[in-house]
Structure formats: structure tokens, C-alpha cells
View 1: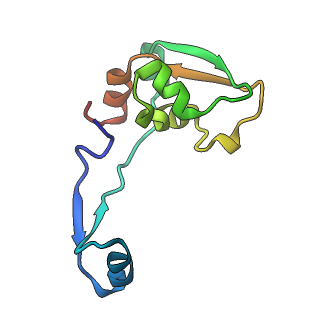
View 2 (view 1 turned 120 degrees about the vertical axis):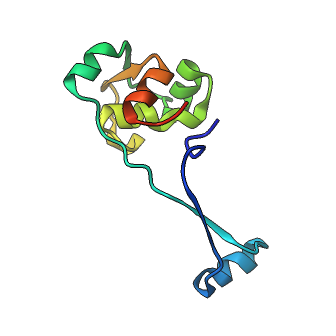
Length: 113
């Protein structure tokens, strides 16, 4: 299951996207509503069990998500939880906190699992 399951989808047939649709062989361009995520409060963080991970050579968010959640699509959970949206924001030796329970952290973010 992806993070867009509970997200509103908008179909767009506007001519503005005509070139893109023709190039990709599509009749309609689909857009997804941007979810509004919030950071967990201190109280919520205290209830979330997390594991420590030291960023090292070869690490990628998607690899960590696959290791901890069994699904690389949830890489963004780790990035959001640590306030580091891209891997470029990390350097070797940085400490990441990995929330262990995916259903719990998604509930805190207000998303369905």
C-alpha cells in the first residue's frame, strides 16, 4: 500500500497538460492532493519506539525503509521523522532515529495504514 491510498485524486484534461499527455500516451493527467503532515509532539515521540542508525557509506532512505518496514516506499517516513527531507541533508556519522512501528507513526501523522 502506498502513501496515496487515502489521498484525493484530481483528473485534469486542461490543454496546459496536453503536451505531457500526448508525450506519455495519456488521455488524462492525474494529480494528487498534497497531504498535510505534522511533526509528532514531544508527548507523541515519547510513545514511539525508535531505533538508532548512524548514517554511513551506501545508506539510502529507501534501503532503511525496506529493512525496517519491508517496503521501500515508506522511505519518506524516516526522512520526515528526522526532519531531513533528502539524503543530501545527511553526512556520514549523522544519527537517525527510525520509528519502528509503521502503523503507529502513520497514525501520528494522521495517515491510514
